[in-house]
Image (cartoon, rainbow, N blue to C red; front, side, top):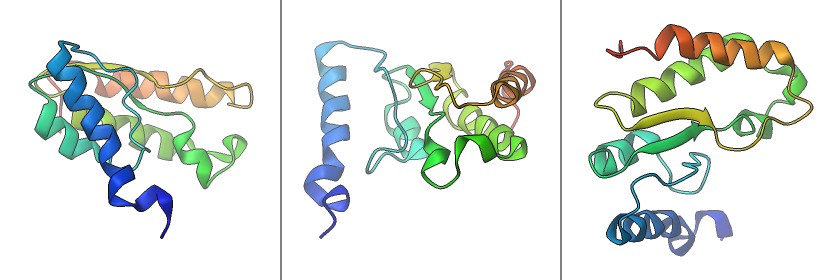
Length: 127
C-alpha cells in the first residue's frame, strides 16, 4: 500500500489541527492543501469557525506535474481564485504562499498571483 494513502498517515494532519485548536492556537501555518487527506473545502467547512487559515496556496503544488517555468498564468489565476472562494468567505483567511518563492518561479507568475488576489480577494468575496 502506498504510505501516503494509508489511513494512519491521512489522519495525521487532522489530528494535529484538532490538537492545535484544543491548545488554543488559532492560525496554523501553513495550511498545506497538498498533504494527504487535506481537502480545502472540507477543512474550511469543518474548522472555518475555529481557526484562521494561513496560506492555503502553495507555489510548489502544481510543480509536481508541471515544471515551474511552464506554469500557465490562466491555471495560476484559477487556482488563486479557487483558494479565495473556498477559504475567504466568512473571514479567517490570510492569503499567502506556504513556502518561500523558489528561484525558478518566473516573475510573471508572481505577478499573475498578485493580480488575481487583487481581483478576487476583496470582500465581499464573489463566488
